[in-house]
Image 1 (cartoon, one colour):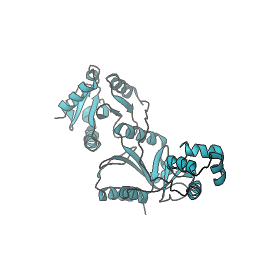
Image 2: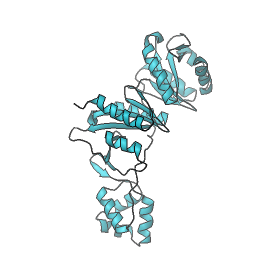
Image 3: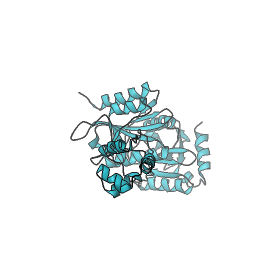
Image 4: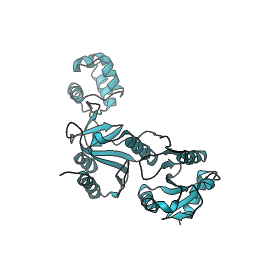
Length: 302
């Protein structure tokens, strides 16, 4: 029986075959992978099981780490996913393990995009406009030729919407030119999540005060993600000695994420646990800049 363990193994094997370093974790993403780019990957047998809160978490973390997020899945509630289609769930790209492997191995990959039941393709709108003018078509004339409205043609040419596959094929035939663009990975836009509790809110505000752009996260191995001239993953604890296992994972994650790791404690404690620097809440309130925070982290990381 095909289960999530097998699915994850397929994804990890594909990454290793393409010389990616990987780390298995839990929460809003299951796999971290790095080569020249950083990937955060969620694996699900059924993509309809993707929770919106997990998706927002994944998007927030990806934004602050400049990582590319992916959901790799086999099916939805109705059918198996197509191996040539990239789906969208909560603004995250979703693809089959076969298509994910192809993406790693192929320099150029032509795919269909599916969102809310609409199947489209990305095209070179500059070439479309130039070829239309070269052949003497007005927007209205070209729209009539392919059977859409002038407004629809205007929105396609000005990249407000992507055309459906049949529309692309008609355009390419009439204009005698190739318009379809290969798939290109995209970074997520900024996502900021509200703190779930007061301690998270306090630390987030302190980071903002000293110039670190940050967001709370709810279903990741850490609780705050931030960046300035460095990226920062942060855990929170009242009693640091009780979270040694979590800190071991945070330390390992910080390596593959190329981030600084820190634990903010409610009370004064040792300077580090499991190799993760610890800063008390009261000490954080006396830090005046991100540079000063970075220096303290580096000193306690020795």
